[in-house]
Image 1 (cartoon, rainbow, N blue to C red):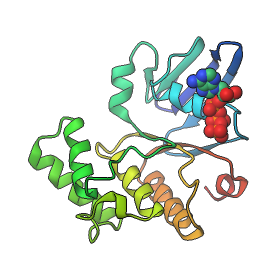
Image 2 (tube, rainbow, N blue to C red):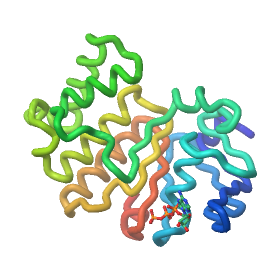
Image 3 (spheres, rainbow, N blue to C red):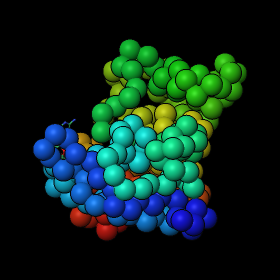
Length: 204
Ligand code: ATP
C-alpha cells in the first residue's frame, strides 16, 4: 500500500454483529488531502465503517490503513493522526465551551498553558470566542456541533472522520459546517464524512 498517496485505504473489510453483516467486503481508497463522502440510508454500515477506521471497533476480516498505519496492528499510531466527530456530541453541557476544549486538550496530554492556548485559538477559529464562557447547555445546535468539531481538532489531525456532521442543523448551520470542512481540506486535512444527503455529498 502506498501511504503517501492514500490517507485511508480499506480492502475487503468485514464486520458482523451476530447474524448481521454490517460490512461485507468494504473497499475504500481516499487520496490524501481530499474529502470523501459515504452516502447511504440508515443501517447501510456508514457508522460501522467510520468506527472501524477510527480504531473504536475491531473488524473481523480484510485490511485497513489510515495515515500510513495499519488500523489493527498500529492502532495507537493511527489515533495520533486522526480526529473524530461522532454522531452524538462529545462535549459536556455543564462546562463552558472554553472549559470543554481545555479538558479535551488535557486529555490529549497538552499541559495547562498549551491547552488554554489551543482552546482560545479554536474558539476564535470557530466563531465561538464571544460565547466561550457560556455553558454549552445554552448553545444552539449549530454552535454545539461547531464546538464538537473544534474538540476533534485539538491536535490538528491529518485525517478527520465526521459522522453525519450536519444532521439536525438548519441551512445556515449546514453552510457554515461545509465552509469549515472545505477550509480544513484546503489546509491539507483528509476528511471522510458520512451523510444521508445527496446534495451534501455533491457540495463537498
Ligand atoms: P445510520 O445512517 O442510521 O447511522 P449506518 O449506515 O451508519 O446507519 P450502522 O450504524 O453502521 O449503519 O449499522 C449497520 C448495521 O449494523 C445495521 O443493520 C445495524 O442495525 C447493525 N448494528 C450497528 N451497530 C450494532 C450493534 N452494536 N449491535 C448489533 N447490530 C448493530
